[in-house]
Length: 187
Image (cartoon, rainbow, N blue to C red; front, side):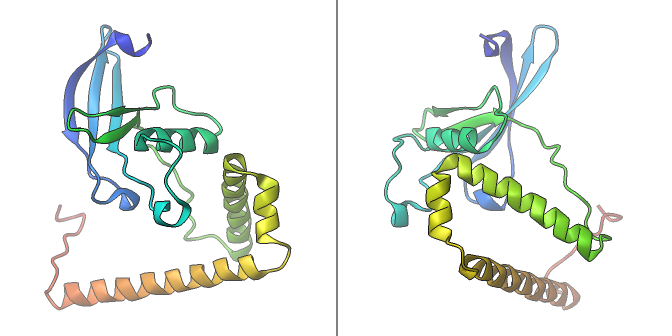
């Protein structure tokens, strides 16, 4: 009933983020009679990357799987969050487009503040995952040793090192003329 007051005015293809590379994504502009705009993102939903290891999803529709997962992990869900199948058979999920993602500017933080921020981020991630599964089972799986902590730390350090190697390679390619870089001033 809420969506019925809107009509589609325009649609555009959207470039997606790293986690969705290779999937189709678009943004629809919907307008209500009182010139009230609503932007909805329509994003392709494919089979989970975990299926080869964890088995086929309990959901037959990939968009439904994504939406149900988001509803489990988010404390407040988007009222327009839903799923559909396009005319070409592609599974999609729909949500409000809110590109007002904010993040802390951590470059000038001291070690203590960075540690506190890491704790808060870890707490939020752990809480979201606990909602999506059996918290006691997850805790039992992780155990009380430092093995999980050590593995995550090792992965994070290796990931950071790989990012630094990639960045050095990027700079070298730009300086060597193999890649063209345009600064904000030139754009």
